[in-house]
Image 1 (cartoon, protein in one colour):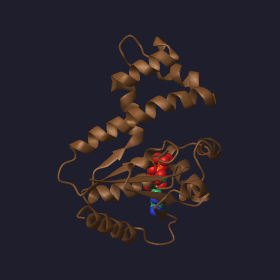
Image 2 (cartoon, helix red, strand yellow; image 1 turned 45 degrees about the horizontal axis):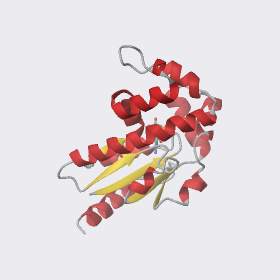
Image 3 (cartoon, protein in one colour; image 1 turned 90 degrees about the horizontal axis):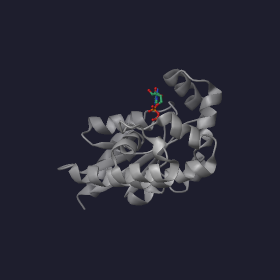
Image 4 (cartoon, protein in one colour; image 1 turned 60 degrees about the horizontal axis):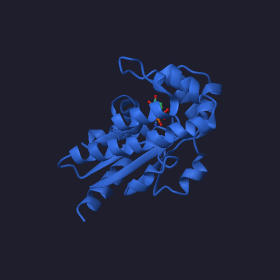
Length: 198
Ligand code: ATP
């Protein structure tokens, strides 16, 4: 089955675009949601987290101690890298399992903010990069999350730039609100439908 990766910077509109594909009946795997779930439910990951960060990373009830873990990795590049190096493979496993469960669909989408940074793009038949101008992304996220521009810029600094991502992207969608995106999405859907029959 075709696996299409879709990514883009914070507020670029990747989730909004995925919702359109969902309307067409295409299942979407949201990697950021899956990452939260595997932290709780993947036994291999849970034991790796405990090994690396201590048993205190989970409460006795088995629930993840988010504030403990956040304090461990916050502002510490090395520790964050360690955490990512165990979380990303767990998300890959979850995606594989999820993909196998999708029956009678021509293709699936994987939405991931760090599609390229995590190397998970290598597992995709094609990747789509959603691009938007910085000012528009800031405006959208400030409205959506009620956070400051400074906070969003901090989050953005943890991701690759669009220029870096574009080198690896097969398809670029410009979500700059100056032209209609829907016809572009329909064209892509048709292209993937054709590809899926080959
Ligand atoms: P994040 O990585 O932060 O989750 P994202 O790339 O998934 O962001 P969305 O959540 O899809 O971005 O979009 C951010 C906000 O911008 C949302 O409130 C969405 O409704 C709005 N938005 C996205 N694209 C458009 C558009 N073309 N026109 C108007 N609003 C838009």
